[in-house]
Image (cartoon, rainbow, N blue to C red):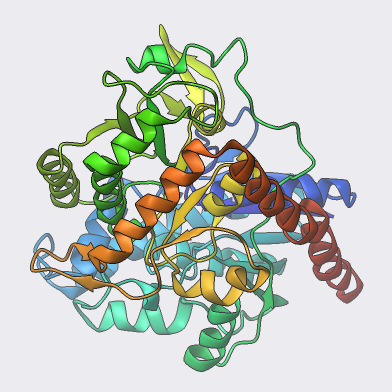
Length: 458
């Protein structure tokens, strides 16, 4: 069959883009022809674009702004509705042409019918499927009702669109199936929309060659002005508020406490480096900024107050190794290969790509036990450093946990930075758990079941 995987963007380091590439690989192994269609392709060399699908398309950004806030850029609700419809017509025509040109049998929209944005794209995909009669497997990574930012609807048009399309229960002239990535979402989809779904968890290729220092990335630290004896703590996620990066900053502040620094200086590090008085603990943020500027400013201010060396590398980290003009860019995997520790302090995630990446990189991890972690991941008994599952927010909406938990986590982290054998033992055990449960073999079995059943229906 000819299958198209769709998203607002592709070829980037966000979780949905990465999962699409995994699906493409497995579906092709199952004998299907698979196409990628998105608003932008990032660093992908193959794929097709409909630029109006981009979440960051100027018209869409204007629509979103006036849908979840007061209508200030339009004269009234009718004008907003007209803008939504006009952009939808443009996308629908291009999508129908693509479906006919590529002889598509199945379309897999990723997050178009779940996150609560991209109204025009959402409607266009619905109408294109209805018009062409192709089968649809709707892949939902995140639902709009999980987002704290979507609490206000500006008008009845917005309410009606959310009710009808996010997600649609059915589409006339189409066989529609729904896929989610965790049990919580599966239960909520039944509760909110009375829609049944299959679960396809996030996975990683645990049979791939391990990331390591090589000729390309051996200058990574030098590029960032870092020494081999510096300790790199990696935040591999995008910068958005739900990642609760402030928790990691407080953790690194505690790592820098006199007693922890003394322990690091008195012992060889796990990699036989010596942590000297000139060495630093550096917080490396590899993801791009996708929050409002206020949150970023808060993080920078907090890091300054905590006297933390925080480096943003989003401008030199791409989906894969490349040169942007004369600028050498590294992959996200190069960041892992050069790091010593990972923080993953999100208070909300659909699943946990960065967790799996850390397990593959055989690095220790600090984690906040967000709900999906507790329901889907924790039962496998991974060895992690935990900040627990309870947080509070201050007057600036910054997340915090009990300071005693932070102090205990920092002590555990130092242990794994100076105890080579213990570090190796727990990271190898974590790797094995993932390989047995969250590998491409798992995805192969799940997708084979979903798409074989689909082909039989046809």
